[in-house]
Image (cartoon, rainbow, N blue to C red):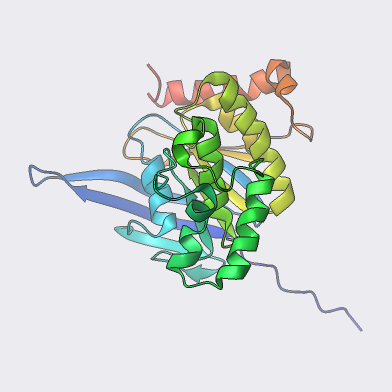
Length: 265
């Protein structure tokens, strides 16, 4: 008697033939995304890299439910997806914290909007503040924190509802180089602790390689996927990897692809 195979779990999310067109002020159409196809496994960390204006952030906003695709399919957990979902947390380029609320209350904002049990939400908020290294700062206010610490608050806020998918749009772009490197290593540790599926958009090829299990490379506008790079680097990843020949090979390969597509000057 043969064993029955369990059905394969659907991907965390999938884009199928995705197109996005915007109407310009002059009445013409601007094609931002063209025929984008890719899927991401549950628990995977993917990074998206490409030139300015290639549609990286638009892609993320469509997945977050903040924009609608002009045509094509967007699936979340195997189901059609076309609007905001409590299963998706978003970290933007700026943390956009409410200055009149302390750190704990800033983290609680999504739970309050969704009407979650306040006591349980406060416990989760404290848990995620601990994970991002901000235990003891719960009663501080945003103006009392550095830029890197404020972005940590933004990450904790995105995680407070225990989303299945964490989307990050250039979250460390405004930070200095040393703080950015620290945040990258902390993000990898956070990923290991939470098991969340993560998609991070960045302009930095080294950052994309350092963080990603796979790197999705996009062309200049209209954005389309030109390369998908499987990153096979030893774990746990440390900053020492950046100086290795293997790391440099990944970076130079992606850079060459972007040069070939006209994505770099």
